Length: 197
Image (cartoon, rainbow, N blue to C red; front, side, top):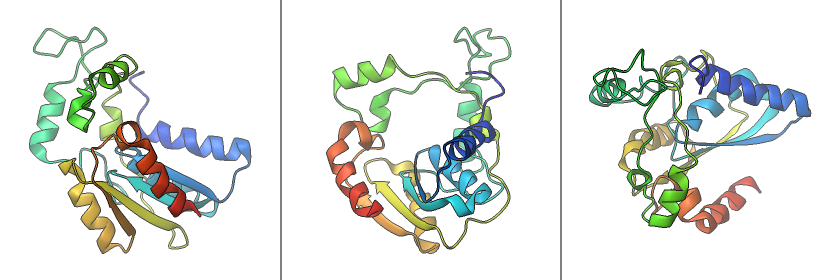
């Protein structure tokens, strides 16, 4: 991924798509980092969005980045593990590393070896800009219905779930790993169908 593509650009991509296709009453589902993307879109285009569904996602306040939502030790670890375009960290002689390393799918609850291998082959490194860009300052309209789905086998997003409860989001739990759309797609789809109707 290019160095200059991060959260801001991902938000703009979705906003541009909504305008280009003439969409309204849009339902956005944001998984993991995608929680920042859908929040940013909702701040910019409140009249176009009908529902936000945070799927085991980070839930930012306006003006926050993913690093702002992460514990300082994790931020330090992530910065130290950045790689350059040849896959080398600064410690390994990498030149100006800016790419986030690819994580083992097992960390996200993908236990099936064949599935994990097929995922690894399709993953791409993303710019650290996805973690440093901040969501636009503004508020998400009260007219937008908001839901939070927590995957309880992945501990990192407990804080976002608690925040969602405090904000009055409708909250649900699935006894699954973080990448539930890969490991239990039918379970997830059953819940999503209920939420969108």
